[in-house]
Length: 360
Image (cartoon, rainbow, N blue to C red; front, side):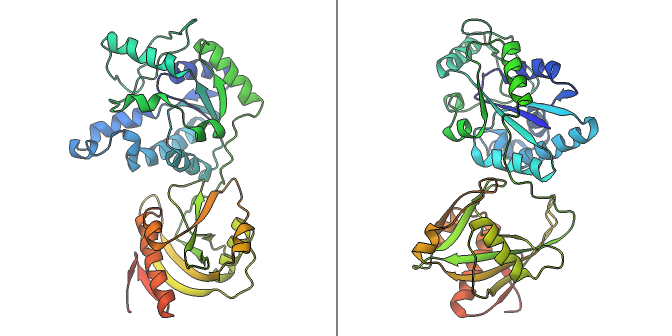
């Protein structure tokens, strides 16, 4: 199990985490900030200058998942992870990756009043403190009684004010502990109590991590103006088409129908027409494979109103034009959609390799 301590910078996560490992049996501290420090030493300055924060590096998010899984496999028990994750899509990617490795996550928000956070930041500035190593933590100082003022950023924060605000999605997603006037020990005791009571369960779908090439079937559904239906998965960044991995021995079209029923509560009574077959090359840590897109036809307004989403897998859906979809889908999925729409217009099936038609 992983206990992820989230919250704004200066909320006392690291000091609380150190106390928490003493309260939870068979637990160890895992600091993702060390990965950020490592990437700063490994990546060229030009690449580092392109992002405002190390969390914007896809390599950081991937390495956090892989390293946490490796450490968890090595020591077992519970990993206590103090790390700010304020962007929902990054939380999705990291927690989804852990879920795919069958590692349950308890998500806990340490909530501290914004005025206190700003006072702590100001005190550090007056003391001439700079960002230290990833594991560096300051003394616990409270607005009243000694709540932690650790969590020094592992690299300079270019827009510190934004990191003092906790977004609404995070308050709704995590179990909240008000640590404004608590010492690190008191905060850790509240967190330990919540974990023992089963609080903070991260209800993200546990999609098994592939171990070889896969075949996946997606279904394109359209409204009465030919906008395409996209869904917003909880377990990975970017929007997606309804669909999923074809199970062993399952016909791909039937897999598409099954996934639409499971994801949207919609049972299609029409045969699916194949639009594109796309060979996706392996890109570590992914293995690639065949990606099929089918035409599921048009949905009436009444049918669209009746769509039901599994909360652990999808957080939302919407119809989008091709131009709107370009700003929602990752590039590889957008290329697949673009050719699928052309195939639908022409009444043909296209064979793609890495998103590019071949043999047409």
